[in-house]
Image 1 (cartoon, rainbow over the protein chains, first blue to last red):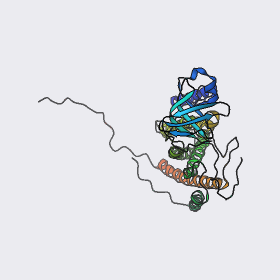
Image 2 (cartoon, chains in turn red, cyan):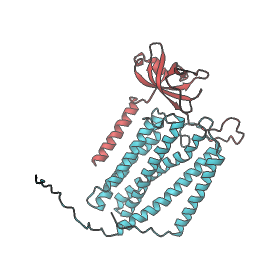
Image 3 (cartoon, rainbow over the protein chains, first blue to last red):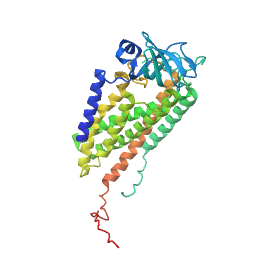
Image 4 (cartoon, each protein chain N blue to C red):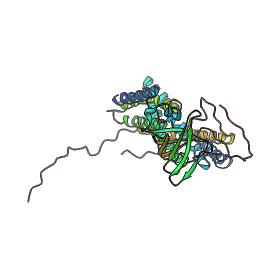
Length: 130
Length: 245
C-alpha cells in the first residue's frame, strides 16, 4: 500500500506541476525574447530552423530558430548530429548572450509526426488523416 | 527453485494462433522492409517505427489486461484471473523495456542522442518501474492470496500511468514527436507506411496473445503443484571468534 501511495503521489505531483506549466522541457523563441530575465540562464530553446539560415564554420554551426513570430540566432559549438536540416524542428541547450545570440553546446533534432516518402518517389501518395 | 515445468500441450487453437502469428509477421516484414518507402527526412531509420510503436501498443494492451483481470480477481477471488493478470503484466514490462530500447536506437540517428529526460521518456520509465513493482509485490505476501490481492491493487492503480504516457506528448512539450495514428491532430502518414505499421501491430498482438496464453497455463501448473518444502531450513548465522594463535 505504501508503494501505491508513493507512486500515486509522485504521479500527482508530476501531473500538477505539468498543468501549472512549471515543468517546461524547452522555451519557445517568443518566450525567450519576451522575458529578459532568461538571458544569461542556461536553458533549452526549441523552434524551427529557418530556411537558408544555416552556415557551418570551424566554430560550429550557425542558424536561426523561429516559432513563426520571433527569431533567435543560434551558434552551436558542435556540428549537428541527427537529421538536422532547414525547415525542421531543432532544440538547443545553452545561454542567450547580451548580443542576442544563443550559444549552445547541445543540438537535438525535433522531427514532426509526418512520415512521407522522399520527393520523386512516384508511388501512391495516399495519406491518412485521422 | 521449483520443480521443472512441463510445457503445456498445444491445442488446435494454439496451432491456429501460431500459424496466424507467423503469417502476420511475414506480411509485416515484407511491408516494413520492402514495400514501405524510407522517410523523406529520417531515411531508413524511420523503419524502426514498425517495431517501436507495436511494442508500445502491446505494452498498453497488456496493462489494460492487467487492469481488467485485477478487477475481476478482486471481485471473484478466483486465482485464474490473477494468473491472467500476472502473465499480461510480465509481457507488458518486457514490451515497455523493448519500446524504450528501440526508441533509444531510433533516437540516436534521428534526434542525435540516445536519451533525453523529456516528459515522454520520463513517464515511460515511471510506467516500467510501476509494473516492475507490480510483478515484485506479488512475492511479498505471506501467502498466495495476499500477494495476488496486493498485486491487483497495484495493477489497477498503476494503469493511471498509461494515459499519462500516451498523452504526455500532447500535455507537455517534448522532444518526442506526437502520435500520428490515434492522434487528436492532423498528421500525415504515407499509405504504405500505414499498412506496414498496421500489419506489425497485428503481428505483435497475435504473438503477445500466444505468449500470454502459454504463460497462463504454465502459471496454472505452478499453482496446482503442492508447495515444495525447503529441504534444508535456514539456520541462523553464528559468528564465532577465531582463536588467536
